[in-house]
Each structure stands twice: as C-alpha cells, then as structure tokens.
Image (tube, rainbow, N blue to C red):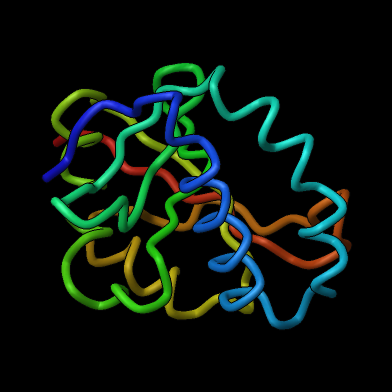
Length: 142
C-alpha cells in the first residue's frame, strides 16, 4: 500500500536508493552513488516522500520536490515490474497536476515507464554531475 514516509525508516529507504541506482545506472561508476549517499540521506527528508510498504517491508518510494519535480522513483530490485512504481506514480498524479523529472537517456526502461504514464520528453541536456545525457520529461493533467 502507498503511504506517507515514516522518517524512522530512512535507512531502509536509503538501501533501496543505493541498490536501485547502481543497478539501473550501470553506465555510471558505482562509486558515484556511494559518494553521494550521505548527501542524499541528509536531503531526502526535505522532500515529499511516498512509500510502497506491505507487512514485510518498504518495497519502493518516490520523492517530490517543489510540488512537481520527481527527484526519484525507486523500487527494490526484486520487486520491479510488479506494479509498485505505477502505484507510486499514480498517487503523485492524484496530488499534483504537473509532474516533471530528469531521466538518463541510457535508462531506456525508465523512459518507457514514464511515457506509459503520460510523460513527454521536452528537452535533452547533459547532467552536470555525471556528464551523461538526460531527458527532461513532463506530464500535465489534461
């Protein structure tokens, strides 16, 4: 079930953040994610966070900044392609008329996912931290 984030579960969420980034972004050195772990852990509580959690554990989460920017959508590797990401994005679509995000061009699985949920590519640019090309995508309520 999708619910509001409980800060006491920050370590659980950060584990998903790290493992998901390393897996989804094999084109970026693993060390990049490890080096940014503490910064993200410090900044994450400032975002609007929704988690997908069942009796066992948190299986995914989404973070929204400034009422519209998806800072990240992460699903634990073993639970991907089971509808969890869709449930998280649908929750945010209910709450926010406009959503936007940046996604690496090389992450084709994520691009297909966002397109299925109504996002459109608006711009291609270079990520200033990684040097990788990324798309800026937006979805507006019709």
